[in-house]
Length: 396
Ligand SMILES: *Cc1c(COP(=O)(O)O)cnc(C)c1O
Image 1 (spheres, rainbow, N blue to C red):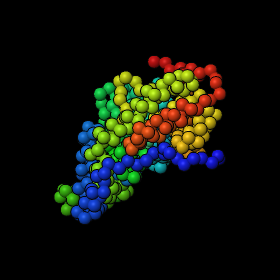
Image 2: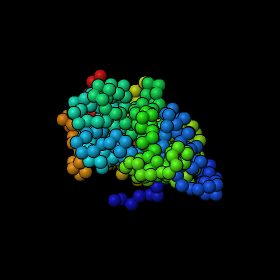
Image 3: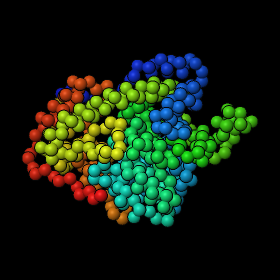
Image 4: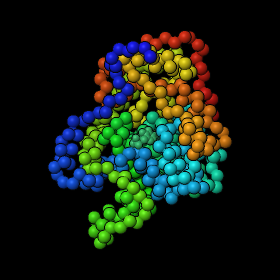
């Protein structure tokens, strides 16, 4: 590895709104710091308002919220769950952990979301659920996927780690599936270091979700005076975060509009100012269909090939800019091969884009000078000229 200048623009930097410290102080002195305290209530309410969902339960991570979906649906050996191969491993791990089989389906070459045209062929009599990820916060084809789910009596789960604040045909992401999961990891738009939420859009899941999240007990009902003692009722674990983390998260959610304005500015700057460079270099910018809006979760470029991506990452680093690649195909990962199954059509698009995708720095604290520096670093990269690669065929 070449010696590099000091990093001028990191890939991510957890944003602070300024209100976090005061709220955390309040949580420390105001009462118990255990879960489901006053800040948990505040943060959950803010989250349900942003999503327009009836209920949201804060969790310790999106991974744990996904684990909860597997418990809620009683998934186990003999069951299958359709998941994209192009996602973080937690999307599949949650189901494998219960003994169910994640079935990997390829992504669309334009939005990089689960390819709805391949989903029905992956459904078997064992299929119980379809999990979608709105990659980069750009919605998956929810109408087509919901229709398939209805035909086969499957539950739709949105892994909405990227999508908070995005919309699809006028509906908020996270409000479309029966269940949705959020991440408040430091790399996400809104964060508390590590955290998450399970969003419930179907009332039938509410009481059990509460029990699963509280170590399998009906402690929530006890505190509301509905039962005179609380007992072990069901399988569960400790999925609720301390109120101290909820205090941090409350500050972030209260400043959601500001965070989004800052992130959109970065995203729009990259998109507009790199458009000509992209065309000239055979680079493809993100696709955002007109019927949906995205929350500027990440900005990526699809380069012509793996060699160009590697060269470009090194070039950016030499300019003090940290770019990164992203998801490696789950169906080819050691655990994916062991616990999952690949749908009959395979996942050639996932394999292709995993090699060519490069993400640029994007965080709410980026200044205009940082944006300029990233753009200058990108533009100063002069790859060996090759014929621009045509976009992959994308019928319908
Ligand atoms: C970040 C992420 C997760 C995991 O979130 P944690 O809160 O870190 O558990 C899961 N799925 C997707 C798509 C993600 O981007």
